[in-house]
Amino acid sequence: MEMKYWKKLSHTEQDERITRALAANVDFTHSVCLGIPASRLDEQVFYSQASFLKDAPLLRTYVANPNHIGCHTFGSSEPFFAGTHELEREVIELLSVDFFKAQPGSCDGYVAAGGTEANIEAAWIYRNYFIQEHNAQHHQVAILCSSDTHYSVAKAGNLLNINVCAVPVNEQDRSISKEAVSATIADAISRDIRFFIVYCNMGTTMFGSIDAPEVYADVLRQHNVHYKMHVDAAFGGFIYPTSAPESVLNFANAEVSSITLDAHKMLQAPYGTGIFLARKGLMEYALTKEASYVHGMDMTISGSRSGANAIAIWMILFSYGPFGWLEKINKLLYRTDWMCAKLDELHVTYYRHPRMNIITIRSGYVPAALAATFGMVPDDHSSEPGWYKIVVMDHVSIDQLHDFAVQLGQSLMLQPELA
Image 1: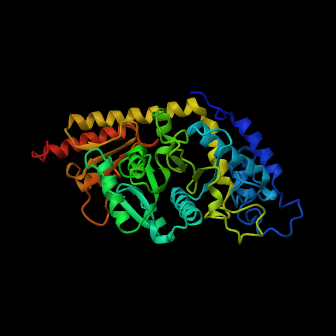
Image 2: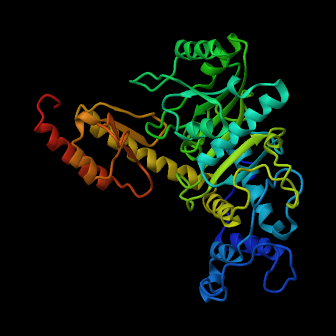
Image 3: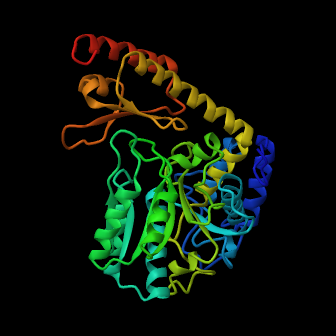
């Protein structure tokens, strides 16, 4: 488990790094800065001299209110917040290299407002790439994904005026076949679609299923069309690289051009902490030239964004280190294995990828009242659900899973046809 950047830091070491970073930022209290349309958080509400802040570097960062507008891995950035920009660069480099096997210095990226934004950023970049480099028309560009893919791809298609081509999945193992991919591409080509933005899932939202990138790539090459591949690791990005180190959904795979993560899922960071990673040479296709008053270049959807979100990710990663994180992931996988064993004893039909912490149960086995009692999430809120899912997060204990298994077993005894 050789890591280049990722290690465990004590609270004192983290505090010292963040204190130095904030000291390198503009100090709105003591510096003269007449042209910045921002300030520290309002003192009437957020008192910056509260004694507890000295032991809370993340809260100090929120109060200092650094703006992380732009992409800090590319070119120059606003000098007023240079200190915390550096910590965001560390996050992007650590994740690219130590999680996703990139070569050092080979990736750009930024902390987005969430996985949805990061997924849309990818489509925006590749649509512009195809238009600028291959003279593509909007109607010739499409997103290619499985039918289990997150709804953010539908948003991307709508916002960017490009098609979305969904490949049906196998109902039992949630996989995509070469035959299904080929049929979907052939249909797209018949509608004059020639350029494909592939979304390959590392942990679908409902099932936690993992896509095989070679299935897409083999078929796309056979059809001799242009494509770029993005990995949607919004859920799986902070678990699957640890639970499946042999994975090919990373930058060691030449097919992969960019990756989305969501730190506010498995990493338990505050909401609004998505991450977009991309190989060098791609971010500039999202350059907004009109943002001329910004020092550096803005290639992000969100523009201004809180630097505190990047600091939260940095702190969590360095609080655990790789071995602490391995222990945490294995604990969650053990609980998931335990629950699956109980479901097997009850002869309940479910789907679970063996390296993931999501269990999705056929709704026919779970009474709606029981699902509501245990806070299970259906695949469809607007009509009769086909599935209910359990996500074994940090707060989900074996005691809770045991209680669910007992009550599920009791309900099945009342349904002889399912028992």
